[in-house]
Amino acid sequence: MEALKERLGVPQLNLVEDNAPSHQTTRRVDEEERKSHRIVTLNWPPKSPDLNQIESIWSYQKDETSTWNFVHASRQVLDAAKEILVRTGEELPQEVIDNKCQAFHEKLQRVILHDGNNNFNR
Image 1 (cartoon, rainbow, N blue to C red):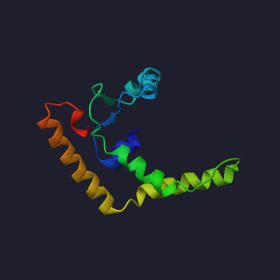
Image 2 (image 1 turned 90 degrees about the horizontal axis):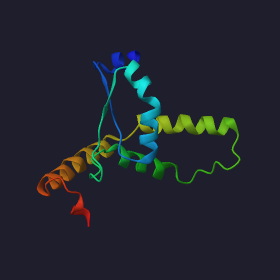
Image 3 (image 1 turned 90 degrees about the vertical axis):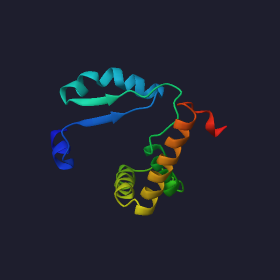
């Protein structure tokens, strides 16, 4: 963690998690680990609109890899796939990043206009 903070040039790492049950379980298990590395967990209010743009990046990566078939794949194939996923993230087109940033600002404005409610997508 210290090397990552140094590489990024940041004094601390912040972790944003939504209220998915798997995240809540992990939060309880990893609490001591987070404390030891001084990772700040930002609380995400329940039933809030998803302003975390990483969710749409996961969708982008899923679309990029949707034709892959890993049933009974060898360790070598799985390792190669992991490398491709990392590279896909590193080579994310700037246009995609720009679009996600713009979408974030637009969604944030809708949240503000609806007093924090997430009913604007209905």
